[in-house]
Length: 199
Image (cartoon, rainbow, N blue to C red):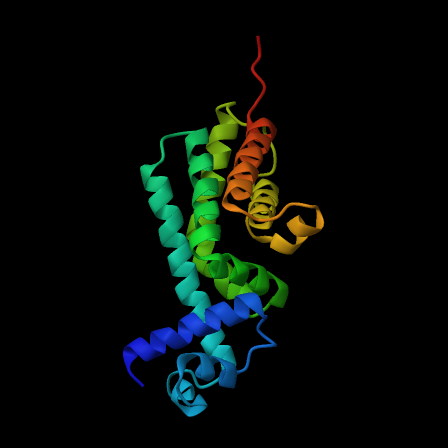
């Protein structure tokens, strides 16, 4: 099994875990997608749990890199919030399986969820510090930064990825509808987060 095949096994596992779920995915499924034997997958990933760990680690690194890139190019204040939301929606278009994995990991709980959260913790801490600075400066409404991050995370991920829920609400997912949802979400977050102007 070559290194590129090892990477393809991670890709296949990511897609299947995100779309079908961890429990519904077997190592045989992953091997079949890659076109190798199950033993070839087991050579690098001695169990499905170890394969999941590798998928989580690589996905967390990819997500962190995308958000760091967005933040590096963003301005200050509200521009940073907007940059993160836009980055997540771009991922929803380009790498929907990455965001699907986040949903699946949240559902699975330990040990995968704590592993993902530990990998993303530096970003979470930066986000909390940013929010607390903005709140202290009076540019954002004062609230619990942890609760705010959890609410924003759930809202953004849900709006970007819950295709079936959106269909049930009568909205067919298209590029135009995704752009509209992003704009509406940004408007909602802006009105919810921005401190009222005192005259």
